[in-house]
Structure formats: C-alpha cells, structure tokens
Length: 263
Length: 201
Image 1: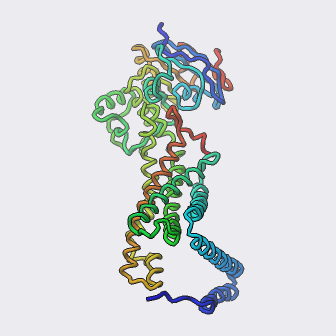
Image 2: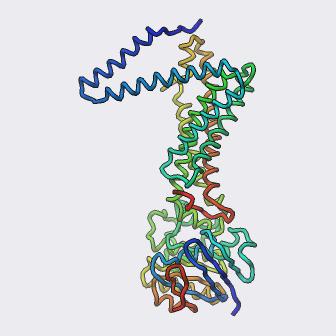
Image 3: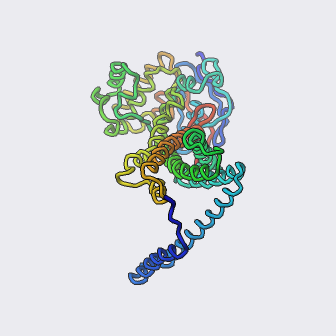
C-alpha cells in the first residue's frame, strides 16, 4: 500500500479550519486572531523550510553534512535544557551540561539503534539517522532539563543538611547522593508515564504516522516498541549525565559545596 | 599547654588574614556583630568555604589530610542544624542508640525524641541533637556556631557543663556566641570579630 500524497488543494481545505478559529476569535472577541494567524504562518514556514533542508541533506547523502545538522539540533536542545531551570550556574556551565548530557545520550542511543536494530545501508543514511536523532533529542531534552531543574532547585534548600553531613566527615558524594537520586528519578518519570499510557491513553505519533503512511499496524507497533526502548535508555542516560555533571560542578578538590557557583 | 589548633594567614575573599593559636582543652570565644565574619571564620577552618592559608592540628597540616578526614577532626556545628532523614535517630550511627540517648539526656532531651519526626522537633531540640551528633565522634576540635542561641537558660547551663567536661579531657573549642557572659564563662581566650578581622578586646 502506497502512502496517499497530499496536493496543495487538500491542504488548503484543511487550512479553512484555521479561518474557522479566526472567525470564532472575532465573533467571541477572544482577541486571538492575530496570534492564530502568526502561529499558523510560522508553523507553515518553519515546516516547509525544514522540509527543504532535509531534502537537501538527503540528496547530499554525506555523513559530515548529516552529523553537522544533528550537531545543530543538539545545540538548540542544549540551549533549551540550559534555559529551563529557575536557578542557574554562573557562566556557561548550564549550556555545557545541557550539551554534554543531551548529546551523549542521543549519540549513544541513535548509534546503537542504527547499527543493531534498524540497520540501514549505510548505517548513517540521513533518511534514518536524522529523524531518529530528532525523536530521541526531543525526549532526552525533556529528561535532562527536568533533572537539572530538580537538582538546582533542591540544592540550595538542602544546604544545611548537605553541609551538616560534610562537617561530620562524610564525602561530598555521600552528602549529595539523595539529591542526585531524586533528580534522576524526576528525569525518568515522563518516559515511564509515556510507556504505561502508550496504546491505551495515546496512540504514539510515530506509530500513527506510519499507519497513515500505509504501513501494517503490527509493523508500526514494532517500530514504536523499539523506539520506546530507545527513548527510555536515552532518558536514563541524559538524566544521569545532567544530574552527575551538575553535582560535580558544585564541588571542588576539597569536597566543599560551592553554592557560590550558582547565580 | 600543648598547641592543638594553629592558624596562620588564613584568608578568603571576604575576611582575614587570621592568626590563631589554641591549646588542647582550651576555648577561644568570638563575639561581634552579625555579618562580621564569625561564622565564615569557623567555616574556613572547617574547610567548608574556599580559603587560603594554613591550619595545623597537633602539628598535622590540613592539606595533608583528605577533606572529610579533616572535618572529622575539626568539626563545624552550624547555627542552623541540618537534617536529611525522617527521624532523629536515623542521623546517628547504627547501634549507637544508648550512647545517643545518654548524651541527649545530659542536655535535657527525652529519649522519645529520638524516634520523633525531625519536622516535629523545636529549633532548640534540633540544635542540641546536632551538638550530640558532633560530640559522639569526639573530634579534638569543635567549631561551634552559636550552640546555645535558641536555648532556654536551663539548657544553656547543661550545654556549657558538657562542653566544659569535654575541655577537661582535651577537646579544644572555637566558640562563636552573641552572649558575652557565655564568652567569659567558657573562653580562655576572647576575641571580637570586626569587619572580617579578629581583635582582642
């Protein structure tokens, strides 16, 4: 079964629903019509642009170009991770922690999937590598930023407890362990929720997309299961990396708690 | 008297340089206005805040010990006690209940408090328990930051008696207090902290 390709006319028919939203906004005086118009226009421009970028990169079929695009995606994700927590490090540590944790988790899980499960020829074929990296990135971004936010939010509050343990001669690793544990836990919750709700509460996007594109539901389900495993692994790695890097950045060679490194 | 604690050119971005010699079993009491650097001085000796300079304990230089080992020997007890588990007793070594209860009783704390949830204890009860926690490890130097701040008169007497007993067996104490009569009662050496500098009154 071949996918049903959309014509510009098909899309224009759907676009009339946006007009419906705008009419609603004017009629009910929601004062949202401008925002609706801008958001819809942005969405179309951004997606068409990325469509052309992907088509271009696919046509190059050059591993360096693929890697470069993925690196740019990782950088944007790292910026999101860095910006999310209310409390931040002075300087660029937030960004570095975001980049390392998100990049590390994405590369490991993506390469594992490409070389063992999906196995395109060659394994770095951009048709597979880029969408896969994108899906993983979206999830590990979520875990890393939740973990970082949890750790940085609790460390100041828990300062008396941490320093009491240090004063009694415990190592920094022991004194900070409960916070690191809690941060990793926070980072893993979304993927656990996603896995338990999959198929009952939600029909995951990838599966839906593949069914729409004409794939047999059971084949689409297999892909979705593979993907969930990848995402849980990626979430775990990025939560772990973000939490430990943040904890490590807050101490020094004399195992002090260096809150002066926070803003 | 044998020198226990020796501090030379100890400084940080915000205070110092400090010089101090404290004998075994002696107590140096430091008074002074809030924000003058009293707590910071104790924290620098305990190596909890960044600092430069040298500190010796019975002739052993601080840098030759790993930080946790140093802090076991020169233990800082904060004015704001810190807790990480649900009940009080969980903050002490396993199988130390009888010792904890005995020492707590000397400070007027009922043994039932040990199983109480930390959030239900008063500030003064927590303060005394945190002192018990430090004393049980018998560090040769205690860095006490307002140990009797939130306590009633009777408890102050109990705490001071226990501290004096420890001094008699060789424990040295660096005491920060807002109570000048306490400084006179306990301190063999008395100092005043003014804007990050130690002065002898």
